[in-house]
Length: 352
Image (tube, rainbow, N blue to C red; front, side, top):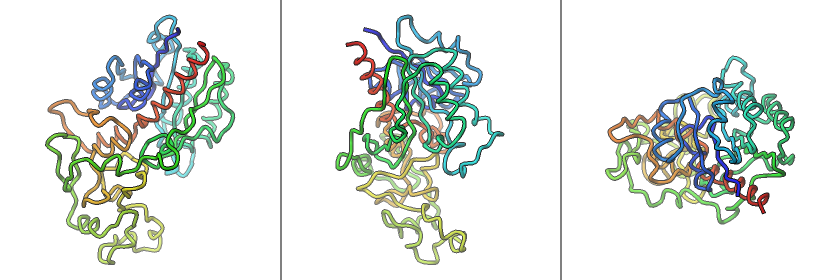
């Protein structure tokens, strides 16, 4: 039986790597330029080595050295996606060095000759030439992938991830046809905020849980505390007394931005978790019931990280900005597991 081995480009804190491992796909290494990723990546993903090397500087020879002889070579990755997201208004920004990182991914596909490739990103990437070039590379290298574009975008709640998040997930193989496994949690099977967070110990704003240092919340000013106390799950700042409404929202140009200062709803998936999810004013990140923003641990759980996933070594600094970045930028672990299960099913089908 052929054994697979994966390498994770732009690995971050290890969401995709952990998901692959949970699906039974070993991961040899992860590459990222953010040193803060090293501890969570290696500590929670035994056997996977963190390499602080830019993908732009990674050679095909160094990459190929991670794959044992006789193993199916799997190359996965999520190039930094903020530059492609809807928040950039869809503009090409040639001055952003992140813009060309998907081209570097394609270079490694051409030169390192993996057998299976999975690329994950924001759906808006499909509008840009860099994505078209990536597809051309896959075709030129003899990869199979579904041409049904509607199957390229995964809606996370359909796979058991309790947040409204859509991701472009392309899986390609030289062995034969492959596509992402069908949704596993449609309809009533979808997980919601209550199922994900309902059993965690309650906290006040600015508190932390003695049993879990990651279950900590940011402080709230007296004004924001009053605002969240006047907020209802699923509501907006338009429901507040006029004295609490921010000046920018009182202007005509600000009335079309209701998606901030909101509470989550218990019985629905959460909004998309961003790198600023720990701040009440940064989106609909208020706890459904308690007068605070969600904690770092709650954000990690909504990203489907295991409840014991550690982001800071003992005695380390729990910096909200740093940990928020690691969690918000991660590929949801469950989505990584879906990719891993897709690859496993594919390999098993071709080994019968």
